[in-house]
Amino acid sequence: MLFEVTILGSSSATPTSTRYPSAQLVNLLGRFFLFDCGEGTQIQLRKLSFKIQKIQFICISHLHGDHYLGLIGLLSTMSLLNRKKEVTIFAPKGIAKILDLHFKLSYSELSFKLNIIPLQGSSMKRIFEDESCELFSFGLKHRIPCWGFKLKEKKRPRGLIKSAIEKYNIPFHLLKSIKSGSDYITPDKEVIKNQIITMDSSIPRSYAYCSDTIYFDGIIEHVFEVDMLYHEATFHSNLSKRARSTFHSTSLDAAMVAKKANVKSLLLGHFSSRYKDLNILLNEAKTIFPNVNLAIEGSKWKINKK
Image 1 (cartoon, rainbow, N blue to C red):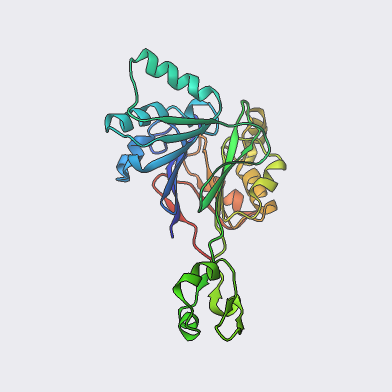
Image 2 (cartoon, rainbow, N blue to C red):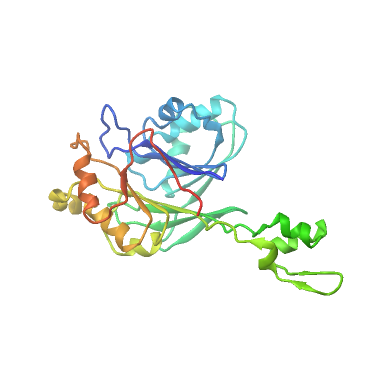
């Protein structure tokens, strides 16, 4: 089953002719999460021929414009297309005022319900779950309140071994309990251990999104051993003072988080417009953490089963 990250925008506050502000689309088992929604997000979705009505959840990390100014346009387009299905938005509490004011002054009304869930606290907090996945928020350190997100697949039930089911002639009505871990007791009272008739499911996959933040060790526990970590890398380390003063990270900072957290892979993004060639950031990060890539517009990254 698919777990895929699509990069829609990778620029920091000032977009360029080739880079849009922050936005990512994550598909986890057919559930579509939009992480941040900078200007041009819906244009990027159109370019990728993605049906925007599939988006169910929108996660806004903080209320700097390059992370949410595309939201009003996206919601308006959904409404113009006569959407009826509810959209859930996880965002700082001010987002409700922003949206209410816009739709009030523009005499507009959405065709669907918004379920706005305010982000709170700095500790890891589960903000959504269903039978297949969980979404968590955690506090970052930026100039204004800001949150990161972790999306995690739930452990699936054990898989049935078809040949073993046939061998022991196990009745259909017992298969559900066996998948849940029960042994099988034959009509002759013989106990067939669950491990003989089932196989373990794949290891649950995970993705973490660390938006604007200064480096701090507290991030590490929140993203520990995730399969893929996105971490902002606005500057090269030769501008570390600038990074600290603006509460941003360098490519070296991002790589250090990835290394200490023992993540499987790292995506760098939120690049300053001053960098025409992003390899300067990529190469610096690789000096500390080898499995690193650039979050370039249109690129897709799959998190494979193990």
